[in-house]
Length: 171
Ligand SMILES: Nc1ncnc2c1ncn2[C@@H]1O[C@H](COP(=O)(O)OP(=O)(O)OP(=O)(O)O)[C@@H](O)[C@H]1O
Ligand SMILES: [Mg+2]
Image 1 (cartoon, rainbow, N blue to C red):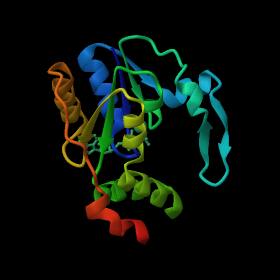
Image 2 (cartoon, rainbow, N blue to C red):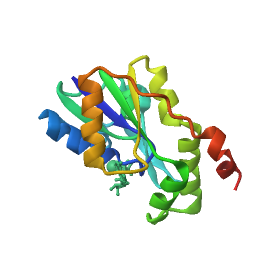
Image 3 (cartoon, helix red, strand yellow):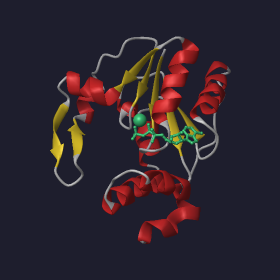
Image 4 (tube, rainbow, N blue to C red):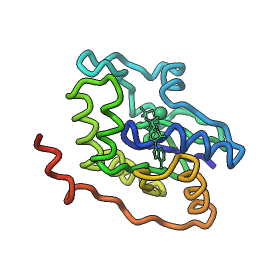
């Protein structure tokens, strides 16, 4: 089984993906690093100081079976399950403010979380999607709960911050 762990930066992908890999005895795959190795980084965004990754080609990327793929673009990789981590925008803002990022970059990422960009892209893939709220708790606990959901083939309720946090978009 291939599990993709996606979500806006700061939603806790790395901790959750590492613990999920440990619990299943799967390989942990850092997608940014793999994309770099496979030549899928096509440039650098001068404004955002972030790598530009060819998302079309991520769909052809060969990921080993029995792995957990960590990355905010992992929903473009062929997977059996996409786990989308979601964090309440006000809490995510606190996490992102601890990074040495520009206000603009923080704002863009908060906007993506409020609009649910990763989730919509994940749902467009047609693969099974589990949305999970990582506003509280820890990555370890989250991974344990997520494993339970996967093993019992349970569904999660969709998460939508837009109605309650729309105000944060126009600041
Ligand atoms: N329930 C939770 N699940 C996961 N992380 C949580 C949770 N609650 C709090 N956190 C904390 O949130 C932070 C999120 O981690 P991090 O910023 O590495 O996320 P990320 O999604 O891997 O980001 P990036 O895309 O930049 O790699 C960590 O400090 C983690 O301890
Ligand atoms: Mg990470």
